[in-house]
Length: 482
Image (cartoon, rainbow, N blue to C red; front, side, top):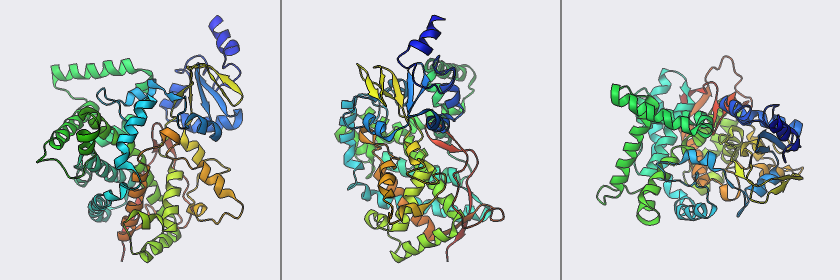
């Protein structure tokens, strides 16, 4: 009883509105079940709208929804550090990668090392590789589209997986070939499924460890394999083979993040960890964005025609500078990134020692605060009708001065030290994929009988974990362009 009295009446967080009546007692009573069902980042913005910028979601956990607070928490040299309880679950083989490194100094050093391959001036060198991979996907689509509508999510995942693995390891993992053979690559499916399991990993790490040990024991005595574990083990073996080839001067690929980092910038194991981690955040978010863009274009034939006209006038370019200078393409991709909001993670941070005053409340040191960048992409003031795919919002001439607010709230890659290092990579890939696929195909709705062909797409129903996942399939029909 005394604990409940303290929790609800005497705790430093007692004056902050609760997400649910049991939220202050344990994160397992509100936050975990809500996140497990993929509803945490969907419910919290609605609660913030009713309760204010701070909402208590656990005994020592607070969600915030305020761009000013977000800028403070994620500012360069911010005293708010990543929450190890969450980020440690992304560590590969005991070697933290950029996303999972929690020490700010180590993170800054790693980011500097990796910047030589990810900065704006270096990314265009990847154009030829990306175009070649997109061309392989186009050849698959030429055959697959004859059999019926295309399911965009696994199709775009295959493209993204082969592009990222070629960049990271020097060789494609074979996702497009696997799709062509009639099956999505197991490790890619499992990688995407892991995001939905992250609430279990972060809240019950010991149980997860016991499960993996039990699975190994079962395999040793019976030979029975658990697909989620064996697919990961096969990927680990493949990654080790790529590292061995990289360190062999005669077999080393010409294009490889692993090659540059392992030889000159960091230990082999750290470089391998970084390369493996790229197939997580590097595939599920960009591939989902591409799938949603193509789906939205299928429903808005007039904008698709306008986009094709702009690309034709520019000569179907493939260089980054020309691509991003085409207004309709830039609007198409930026709105697709905003509308999809694929990176749904809450990005938890720890309040520094001594506490910090946020939104007029003193939050004690050591507690966790978090917010998702995709909430700001759906702000109703900055982005009217946020659930609609409206490329025109990026083409407006700003008669009322609203574009300043729009640009301020456009933070799909976060801000400050946590800004995604792969943002230029993602933009180039989306520019190329959209333009090269439109060069060869007209994209139609999967069911033209039920859907008007000139309307602004509404964001499909979804669940949100580390990444957002649509509940249903995003289907389109492809017709060869004359």
